[in-house]
Structure formats: structure tokens, C-alpha cells
Image (cartoon, rainbow, N blue to C red; front, side, top):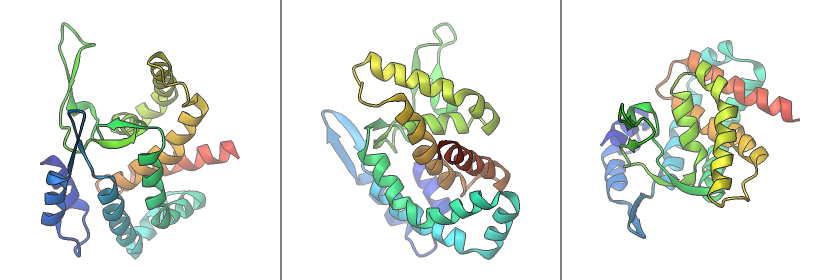
Length: 214
């Protein structure tokens, strides 16, 4: 499973990766014929432990501090205790069926019918905010492209929700949740496999949005 390979790369040494993958493979909930992987709680625990160990590394902290603003560095440190709350909100507020590994390599389309798409690799799908899929797709295109597209895509997302009868998720709330929930989630994930020059941009974007809304 792709998810097991990714988990193995970020798991702390004191967490059994084989057991973790077995849980991921077997913790499946059947809801109205849809197979939904129950991984949010496991992700929260695993990433909290792994991120704490990463931030305990003096060399990593020194490198991060030299690359980002003081506010961004302070925010990165605060995530050590904020991750469980972050995951709770992403799984309990405005949730839907989320793919959770939604990037361009998992989306196929026909050349003659580009708007008909097939989405692969559903092994990490779970109940969570759909903004997780949006932030994965956009930020894995690259931060520069993501910055150009984000507000347009979030506007489109809101329009589609309205079209299909979901009217209680206001556009301003969608934008706020994207920058204060989904993007921090993306930062934590990317901090384990992306170069620090890439994750510093995500951090600064979170802080920039926070400063604008104060």
C-alpha cells in the first residue's frame, strides 16, 4: 500500500510501522456501500508524535528558524500541541468523504473527454473536510501555481457546494478554514518529505493570512 510506504517514512522509531499499516489496512468502515478508511485518529496520534520529535531536533529547528520569519517559526513550534485540535476540527466540521491523497498522479482523464475523470488510490479515504483534497492537489502542483489558483478554486468549491444544496458553508468560512486548518495540515505532512525551502512558503502563507485577518 502506498499509504504504508508514506507512513513508514515519517513514523518515529518507537512506533511499530507493521502494526500501524495493519491497522490502516483493516480499520475499514462500511457505510452505505462506501468503504471509508478510519485513519483520522491514527493520523493525529502518529503525526503528533513524529512532528514533536522533528521539532525536538536542534539542527532542524536551527535550519527552520534561519529560513522563515519569527512569526512563522513561532507558529511552527505551536503546532506541536495544536495538531490534535487541528485533526479534530478537520474530521468533525463540514466533513464529507475525502480522498486524502488527491494529487495529479492519482487523477486520470481521457484525451477526448477531459472532463470525465477517474480517481485512483482510495486507501486513505476518510471522513474529513474536503479542503484537505483541495490543498493536497494545489500545493503538490507547486507553491507558486497554488498561490495563483487558490482563491479561484475556493470560490469554485463554494459554488459547487451551493449547486448541490450545501448552503451552510459560507465562502468566507471556507477561505478561513483553508488557510488555518487545511494549509497547516499540509505543512505538517510536507515537513516530513519536502525540502525546507518549500515548506517555508506554506508557513509564511499561513502567517500572512493570519496577519490580514487580525
